[in-house]
Amino acid sequence: MSTQVPFFEYPRLWSDDREEFLSIIDNVSSSGGFILQQAVSDFESELANYAGSNYAVGVGNATDGMEIFLEAIGINPGDEIIISSHTMLATASAIRVAGGVPIPVDIGEDNLISIQAIEDAITPNTVGIMPTQLNGRVCDMDSILAIAKKHGLFVVEDAAQALGAKYKGQHAGTFGLASDISFFPAKVLGCLGDAGGVLVNDKDLYHQIFQLHDHGRDVDGEVRRWGRNSRLDNIQAAILSHKLKTYDKVIARRREVAQMYQERLGMLNELQLPAPPNTTSDNFDVYQNYELTADNRDELKVYLGDKGIGTLIQWGGTAVHQFTQLGFDQVLPDTERFFERCIMLPMNVFISNTDVDYICESVTEFYRK
Ligand SMILES: Cc1ncc(COP(=O)(O)O)c(C=O)c1O
View 1 (cartoon, rainbow, N blue to C red):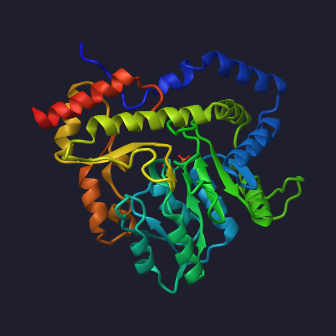
View 2: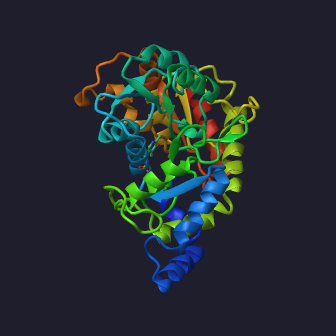
């Protein structure tokens, strides 16, 4: 039987830590503290502390987090927010739900939002820029912040994929007014269901976000505005606290896998690999995904599938501006070219060095057969 390397083994999220998780679930449940209790406030402090932000708020998922911080900032109908077209549709939908207009733009050479495209997309209606720190890599934030300053725009980050990633030593999620982090199971810091966090520095904005996520109630329990319910469950918070303790080891392993991919596949001209770890001192990447572009991408995917290797094409192969049924009608050539060629190889802590060797041998075999 051929070797099997699934793209991501969801059951192992549970089985690898089953005993610890059972004890965490037992502790939280026995205490009766299911909602907005100690486990959540502890995790919020640990998260803020880890990322170097003044505050963190646990929310139901990262998409809610974006909607909430945009609502807290205050978006008027017609306000445009510039995003990369290579992001989850959630980045755009959050802007829509908060009352604004998402403006997807092309990607640059690093496959993150193009700095030139941001400049070109600014109109009198533009109010903000929301870069996605995609695949665990932070965008060129110096340039983005400079453009924002020049045009009087706010910056918020979709850092759903990037907890722990850094740019010039500063953590993803701490560059703008606020950011969201996702704890979806397959995220670098994943829990056992939906969960998210918002990072924020400004005290006032923190209180608005807190109120919005809990029926308008502030930390003192007083209702101060209309709100909703999007709270982080205590059980998930306790699990996340547990996992945060060893998070840097998880990042280190992912960087090791990225380095192995680079060493074993870097010589293939048919592939364009993501930047390996330590290419520049500016970026510290956490490799949420190992996304590359490849000649004959579709055939490669089938070939690897036949070898028992799981691969994935991000967002099902559709960039945000290609959701024409939602009203988008741009042509973004660099993003479109990218989406004809992109593919993700397995990247997680469940794969072994032998798995990586097998994947790399199979990819090489495909191009050299
Ligand atoms: C870039 C990006 N933004 C937003 C989200 C949404 O996160 P959540 O599923 O926690 O709402 C994701 C999750 O996949 C994502 O990758």
